[in-house]
Amino acid sequence: MMQRRDLLKTGLAGICSLGMLQEALASGLPAAGFASAAPELAPLQGFNGSEALDARDLRVEGRLPAGLRGVYFRNGPGLMARGGERYQHWFDGDGLVQAWTFGADGVQHKARFVQTKKFRAETKAGRFLLPGFGTSFPDPASRLPVRAADDVNTANTSVLKMADGRLYALWEGGSAYELDPVSLAAKGPRVWSDGLAGMPFSAHPKVEADGTVWNFGTQAGQMVVYQISAQGQVLRSEVFPAPGHSAMVHDFVVSQRYLVFLLSPISMDMQALRGGASMLGAMRWLGQEATRVLVLDKADFTRRWVLEMPAAMVFHFGNAWDDGRQIHLDYVQARPLPAVNAELRQIMTGVRPSHQPSTPRFMRITLGASGSAGASQGHIELQTRDESVEFPVVDPRMVAQRYRHVYYPTAIDIGERWGYNGLMHLDLESGRRERFSFGNDVVVEEHVLVPKPGSSKEGEGWLLGLCYDSKARCSFASVFDAQALSAGPLAKVWLPYSVTYGFHGKFYAA
Image 1 (tube, rainbow, N blue to C red):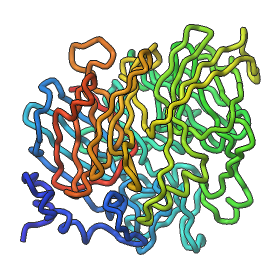
Image 2: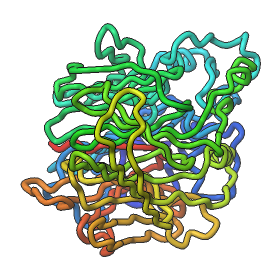
Image 3: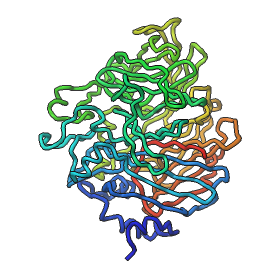
């Protein structure tokens, strides 16, 4: 019989449709607490943590662009169960980082679990020893105490590769975890400077065209903001009290002159937390209160404006630009936190939730004449659309610059099925919408824009991301011409196996 590792490396055309690899991996996919009749939820079953996935000479359907050369790194929850226990929330799974290498000799795939301190301890014990962000376990006395955020760091949300060649797996509640960019082996948490050791470093850093990195973190009512050089040196940082309730801040946006945060009205019930609730379980949605719009001057972090808007749950932004007094930005508005959490707990048990779309929003902020800590001068205008979308991306060359194009996974006539099945391109100047649907057998994840070599015009590039074919029971990467989205994919690159759904990725040209 073919050995499991050999089977993983074959990359044989057609192996997916035969289902051979799925059967071979079945014994390694822990089923604790998971049973589903919804085929699109199968990847959420998760791996058992021992997998080292490698595949060479991947089968290409269609034709890959000759200029697409580099590595697409992607991160997301990969381990969902241990020792008969299962995480209750999708956000909790231990990070599985993938590397898709596009070269002259074809496409290769590699995936490794991030060997965090938590992951290593639980692997040795064969059981969960620490709570998840959205999961608490019984018998806390039999588990490890949580003394710092990095004790529960799953490094499962995104990736960042700096100009110095260092690669990081990111999680919003703790330190960035450095990985070897070739082997994906973990090197340990990154300490950016002595004074910032252990401070949270969010999973959504913004990287400008010159390589400057902006990021933030939140912890116990405090916010920290970072400006980091392309080579990884902290140029400036500031720690200050967060305005209002801000127990969960996932993303932010950067324009030429400003940092902008939308602080959703979420408080932390400390009594519930002390009583054994998970972090997410102890969060309280205050829908009657305002979402604070926090604006920081990039040149002086102490110059801050705080405006208010109706309660809104926001996970992801696209981009922002400003003319000195007005800031223009886009984001996706999700359902209130209780509805989001209910959905993400349902899918972890294999239950298909009812479809509750998140939708695009566009904001214009007019700032007052001056800003200082606690200032509240300004005015907000909002525009809405009704498409079901998430994970907005823009051309990476346009970060913190005036931009025209935004790209999203979208749901098109999916009925009762979970997830997104298509992609959407929105032209912000003309209002023109372009879409493509894979049909209801395919789940579409985030797609990033990869600029074409030698191009300079915004949007001249390819959309690259992952999909799961629930009928073939295999994952594939899809490549689109970003300027001809409705024509369909130029190529699909098939894995000889399925991988768990991820959150975010980045492409780095060779």
